Length: 291
Image (cartoon, rainbow, N blue to C red; front, side):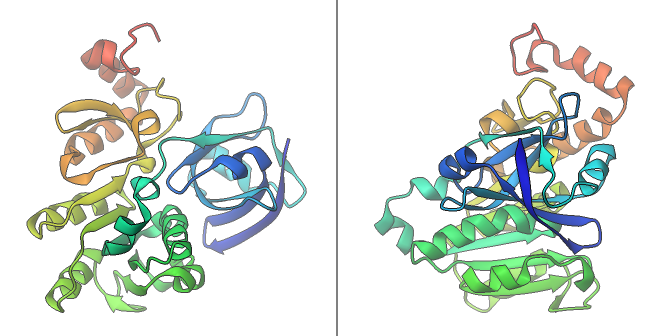
């Protein structure tokens, strides 16, 4: 059992939990995720790792209350425990594989939208620990929905807050802030964008025009987290990939966002899932054809 040591509500319907999971904390890297289950019959929920403390043996998760199982998660309190807390899963951020000297030369921009601030934070924090100061844009619909501002401020080189309604920080979409920074003379070697699919799509359209290589994390489309359900099947550079086993990070300029978003709409209904299984055949469940 994996005890919840801390629980807090970051903002409306978005919660943070510190979970005692020593083996996961010891092995995880920025960019990876875990799968949690409430009980033996519970639904598997993939959640990106927001933070970890190897000495304390804890892993921090952030989740938005959107479905039946996450509503059940909200009912858990400090001292309660998850039945399963499996990880680390997925591939770590490519940044952790960079030689130290090369990494320190890079001019890095992170773009986080909404709950996407949670998976962005551990990467920015890790870079900070390596002596690399990255610029970070955090976008939110309103000031009230903004999360992890204090934590991000402590590790970012420069933090730019933007709200859709102009209630806090800069006014407008994250793409406008990217344009503004480039117009001010900022240059970037790589952009890492994490947030809603539609946000990542438009960030990638812009950065392609600006000739900024861009990495996206497709954790928003994961459902099962094992490659077996077919939910996170995506085309990247003309090839079929699965976000949970091949990612979650991919070259954003190679991702077919329109196809992925259409699949997500279909996947929400039983009829749609049946149609996808029929259309995609053996590639629907990771290509084995026997699932």
